[in-house]
Amino acid sequence: QVQLAESGGGLVQAGGSLRLSCAVSGRTFTTYAWFRQAPGKEREFVAAITRSSGTASYADSVKGRFTVSRDNIKNTVDLQMNGLKPDDTAVYYCNGRPTVGDPNKYWGQGTQVTVSK
Image (cartoon, rainbow, N blue to C red; front, side, top):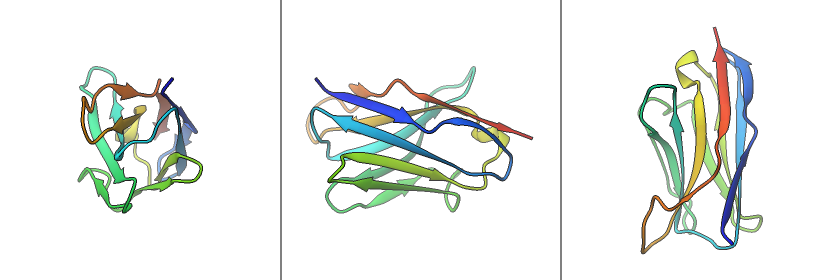
């Protein structure tokens, strides 16, 4: 059974930091991504990283503040978030994207990140 489990969310003041982690079990993926969804808004891309080369990409809104990393031994994907802003408040989801097949099939349950002013 394939599972993606996020952890590390919480409440933090603006300017603070949080580190999210996604534990993946049951298989590996070509690419791992983080998405987020704020209340009343659509789910949006945050960051992604390839399993093999570790090539990372970011949404413009988080560039320079967030860093995505992976540990292929532990099969985990982390998102280090610094300089958090109230606009970063959302539920953050981990997504496993296979080389072939539906990239939107495998998701974690999400973890809440709340940034206060």
